[in-house]
Image (spheres, rainbow, N blue to C red):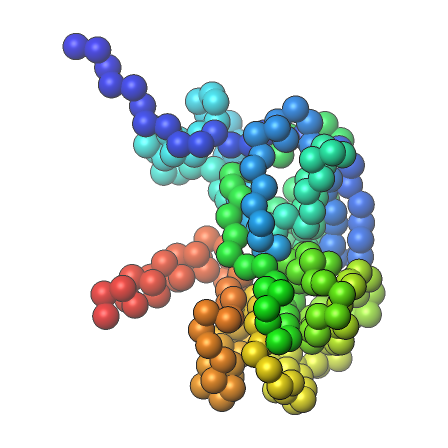
Length: 272
């Protein structure tokens, strides 16, 4: 009997590092491209995200590199580790895809990789996904996040049309982590510094609430995302379909532990 062919998903996008740039003391930009960029399919979202794929050292993976096939054929401990990053920009003409990485020395997986990355290094991606883009019909825009959400916020601010009104709040470590954001919109930008004890939730709540229908984007550490979720829905009565919320990470947990916790929470909600 002939062996049934393995089920296959979409092969990973295989890029190479073209150059790197240190944007701030804790943010490194990776510009990638190469022949594999032809396999990348951009979408219309400003929070377009990819899964950066990190192979387990010493494991031989089937080619073409296919995550679904790997999950089916290899032991769980051989599964590559994934980290989610927003596509800061994509330029088909220039042949470049840009990802910005938050780094804290040797802490974590993706940050240290970005620090060591050199031109010619392989970069494997799956995706992109995404769900948010600024609506031209919104009365005004509220964008809130920390360093992990800054690439998506920057992309959204750049996409806002002239005359659009926006309030933007970003929490970073200190003034050295601020980045220039380019926009045609009438955007009020507020940088908050963690080193000075700034509280992102308090700053958002203290800001004057504009009239008209808001479209909100609140992404970053899960604690403040949850608090602002309650504020927007319970106190301000914002429509749920006008808000994009995502806890990218949780204080005190690594990525694997946080993803497991989120999956458990979803199971509880779905079974309720």
